Image (cartoon, rainbow, N blue to C red; front, side, top):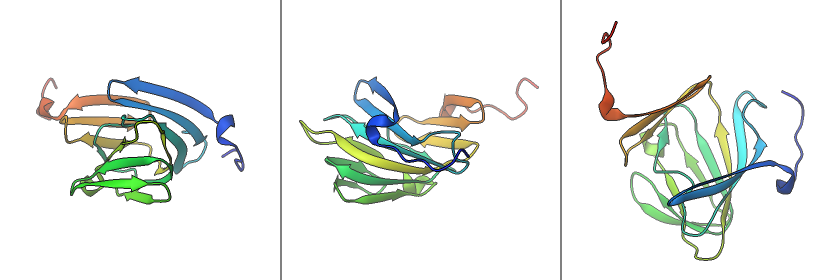
Length: 154
């Protein structure tokens, strides 16, 4: 670790991502590799978009704090409206599956994402039947139907 962090959002490293119905700007407060067990970012989701597809993690837990805007949160049980001042916790299992969508026509949905950080994590995408393996030099996505026998090609 390199010491205490103290930054304004405008001074954080930022990246922008866009793909059809998904878009976000991420401002990294505690970036990957800075701390051993956590990541902290501020996300801005434009009107009508989602940051990520519906998914859940096997190892990493997440907490969102909604700073401003309004959204729709999809979970395994239902969909519910979320708004500024709310906190959301997503456990590292199927019950923590989530997708956050900005429901505003004009205003960004802005939230802080506090996440645990494990060397390896598996992320599952129930709507698209994909599985992802993240971390330690691995960044792979597969269709869950592509299951092979353990000894195949050995």
